Amino acid sequence: MQAISLPRFGGPDAFALSEFETPAVGAGEVLVRVHATSINPLDYQVRRGDYADLVPLPAITGHDVSGVVEAVGSGVTAFKPGDAVWYTPQIFGGPGSYAEYHVASEAIVGHKPECLTHLEAASLSLVGGTVWEALFTRAGLRIGESILVHGAAGGVGHVAVQAAKATGAFVLATASGYDADFVRSLGADVVIDYRTEDYVAIVNRETDGAGVDVILDTIGGDTLERSPHALAQLGRVVSIVDIAQPQNLIEAWGRNASYHFVFTRQNRGKLDELATLVARGQLKPHVGKVYPLAGIPDAHADLERPRNGIRGKIGIAIVDDGAAGPR
Image 1 (tube, rainbow, N blue to C red):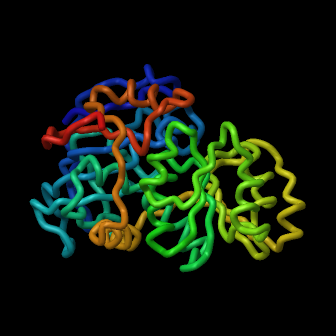
Image 2 (image 1 turned 45 degrees about the horizontal axis):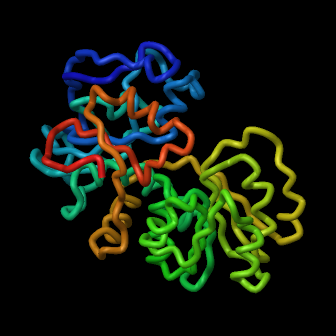
């Protein structure tokens, strides 16, 4: 099989297109012909060596799969050859998805929503699982509550806006002015241009000074330090970004706030919950640009470029299923 491998850590040019043996399927596992994957910030963090101690080289990386089951191992009961599936490979647990075939434990694999293309499904598995864990498992977002989503036009953000709206929350979101209409189309009630507007002031204006119940941080930097100023009493802040420097959270103490830091875990349950929202028409991943397998280095460079103008996710089409792109 062909795969994009990582012989060394570094920039996008560190990748190499190589030939590998198709992996063998073991007990409790499924062998999947990968039709599509996608690019996440975690992918370029791994590539540049941020998690060097957890990624033995050479490595096949990548964290999204949508494809078709080719074979199943002994003991597998939920899937059979020919089933369309989607999942996030076990992070730091073996080869990833930048390949024509992938083997995964049955426990982390879900049946692909029929109404999604493989590109769309591959663009939702990791970010969707992250959103589900952040908003519902950790923050416990409930109907009638309010939430501020930072970076609402991005991969995680555009899914978070839709999932929060499906829950019945009042959704405020930060994005560039260029992306404002796109974010409104996802269901955001208030869109804040982070380049020209102060989100703390606008949140307090829109909530009559009460603040929001939940804040989702997908940006990092000073977002954690400033977020308590826009937070309600007993509010919850969830961040999916590493803390690069110490933060002053004294304001959070005064609001009895709780903080959650999420590095998503893989399981079928989250995929099934997301599939329900997709089937109801309440969630639709957006694929902003598409590359072939050999284009993964260019896709990485694209995603890392500041203010790249890409909405949603960058998809990688490994099998040509006739999906149009870029979109």
